[in-house]
Image 1: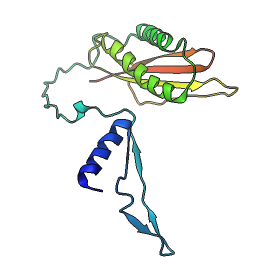
Image 2 (image 1 turned 90 degrees about the vertical axis):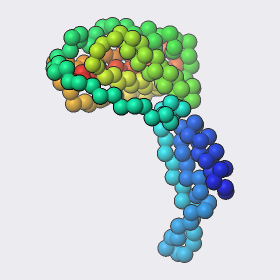
Image 3 (image 1 turned 30 degrees about the vertical axis):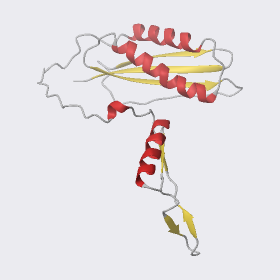
Image 4 (image 1 turned 45 degrees about the vertical axis):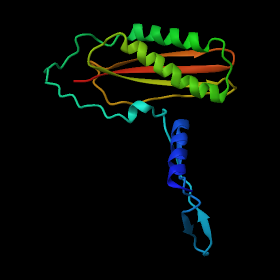
Length: 177
């Protein structure tokens, strides 16, 4: 396979969210019996890389503000209302389909993150976690752990359920000193 074809295939695989070893048919490893076998590896991304990742951003030097406490606290109730609104509007009429729900988790998390950032809460970093699953006769337990400062950091979560799926959404607001 030529280098140009390998680069093109790598770009297509990156857009899909995984990168496989393209030269696996060229790379041979010998096992203990002297036979050869192909070497295959796959890397998956949590989110698909975009074209903006190729352009390096200039580093910004910021001076210390010496601020150790936030001017405005993380608004738990407002963020819970955002989660409730977004989950209801996106998932109210949806049926569970694995591929659709995979894309919906990415879309919903981006929408939630954008709406929380629109609140303009200075010096907070946001982590958005969305889980969507099928309703069956099974139980599920979800947990998370984090090292944080109880006085400034907080979270908000909401669960949604319709006839065929459930969704659990959590937004963490971590104060950045």
